[in-house]
Image 1 (cartoon, rainbow, N blue to C red):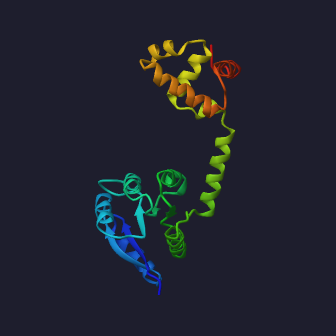
Image 2 (image 1 turned 90 degrees about the horizontal axis):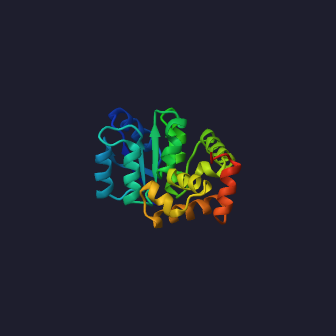
Length: 213
C-alpha cells in the first residue's frame, strides 16, 4: 500500500478546517496530519513535521498567506503549497503562483476539484483551473505585445533615456548618484533585455520611440 499524502491545513476558521478535513477523509490516499490557524503557526508546524502538501488560506491573521507562502518556499523550495481563497482567481491567483504556489483554488470550488488539485501538486505538477489557465495565457500574450522598454526596471529605463540623450556613463552616474560600475551593469542588462548591441542602437531606439525630448 502506498503511503498517504500528508497534508497540513492552514486556515484561521475552525469550521473551514473541519470541512476540509471531512472532504479529504473520504480519500484513502491522503491524510490531514496537522492544522494551523495562522501563518506563524503554519511555519512552526512546517518546521516540526514532514509534509507532502500544505493547503493554505490566502487571508490569515498575523502573517497573510502570500507572505507565509514566500517564507515556506524559501525554507522548503520543494514543498508543494496549494493556496485556497474566498477571493476570485483574478485577485490573487497569479500573484500566488509567482510567489511559488503549486496551485490556486477558490473556496467555491467543488470538493472533487480539491482532491484532484492535491493529488496533482503532490506529484510535483501545478494545478490551475481552466479559467485561470486562460488568464495566464492572456497575461503571457499581453506581455509579448508590450514594447521592450516597458519591461525594464526603473533604473534600467532611466539609463536608457539618458544614453539616448547622449550622456556618458560618468554623467549618468553623477546624476543618479551611483557608481559608474553600477550604471554599466544597468546598461548591460537593458542591452540584453532589449536585444540591442551598443549605445548607437540604444540611441536609435530611444529616438524612434520618442523617449528623448
